[in-house]
Length: 211
Image (cartoon, rainbow, N blue to C red):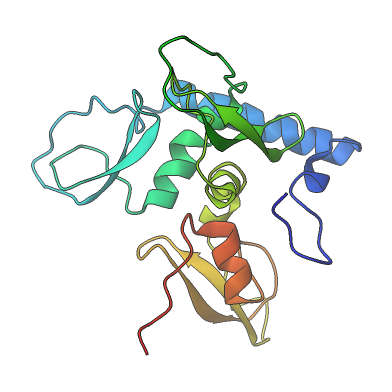
């Protein structure tokens, strides 16, 4: 499991053993279903737009968010946002595909997201077919399926608070974790350390700056 010492793991926080967690889970699933039914921004058959926009789009055949420089009607600014908007609402909710076949290539160890336990689980992936609920690393599985809250920007609430709290949050434009000072230590997706933000919101571990 992907967890930090002293804090609840993703699985423990989603056990649904209380009414609160049952209600939260119902609201999340309902929102995801409504989103998928009423929004086509994840549809890879977009109409060409007049203005080229660099970013990421969701390929439903490959079940992946791919980078593009082409002119599309809908392009997500970062790979994480594409995954949260599309894969977390579709691929992460599918059952694990353990199907085998005679023409399969070499099996790989990958992770799938178990929506009943809210955990990423290691399994033997057969490359015959892929329903999308498969991830090469634990980090990618956790961030894709459990990191959707990172897209919720922090609130300033300058009129209500006069404090001075330093925290980190996911920047939707740069795809990085940035530091900010807030008057209130409340609401929105914010983290006490940059490491906590990166583990929760970034698909790939940031490279260390050159010395």
